[in-house]
Length: 377
Ligand SMILES: [Zn+2]
Image (cartoon, rainbow, N blue to C red; front, side, top):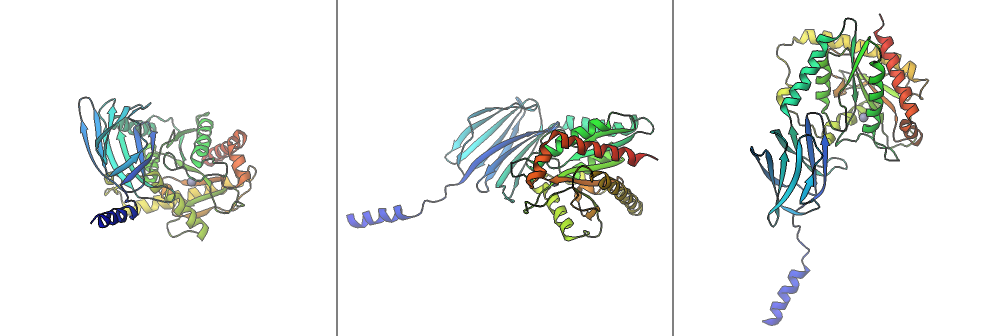
């Protein structure tokens, strides 16, 4: 009996350790003017249950099947909408996160599956609806208050927040470089009355691609320029390139691959597409829309050609002509839209250039002078 009992024990000990549950491996917080996004990295999918409390305003989310985490019991958040996050152990494998809000907020929770180097993610968005509405109204107002003859330009620094974009050998991130160049470009364009420029994003947070198009349309933009830096597995690839939309397939395989890559921004960045916001307007006439799109594309080609001509003196060109593919961010039917890959961040020399203030200024100046010239009658 005894030996059998011992045998039984050793059998149990020889079993591989069972997987006890998910690990929370990281937490990131991104601030935008109208929302704050909290992202938890998870080793595997989990179940969660959430509830809100009104007074004081709090959001509770219970995470089930958690084996371990590195979260602090209390985390003060330097955030416009949230005060702190506290953690309560509920049961052995269940923890509760309590988010203490400064005021009532709309909360959206969703999960993201692993993609590329990103693990399972749990995303909690805290949205200040009043602020969101205020920003939308301010954008819409620009059309009405602009002085006669002024052209509105919307500059879109690609990626942001959860989506770093392409990353260089020295870990330079595309999202940071394009924001810096975007800010310089907006300043240059706003130095005179002929153009008035706005950014789609002003900090390190993510905006879904469709939302960027919507922002440009709310401003009543006369031109939309999306800023990017290219990335390649080939470290030798370098140079600048310019892209326009194609409605019927890409001009070549490389352009298609690039558009697919830029379009995955929504997956990496975590786009929560609220269906109502992106539904087609039934009042828009399709024939009229096609006519508008045709005209916008012709104008995009005209701008792209002029830009390539001017970029030549700043950096070597990857392609001497603009290329076309199905970029989501270029799809505004009524706004000429181009996407600029300023240089290859994955190339050592291009990465060095992209980090130089002087180079960033040169790119911004080239874009600004091409934009001004483009609007000249
Ligand atoms: Zn990009």
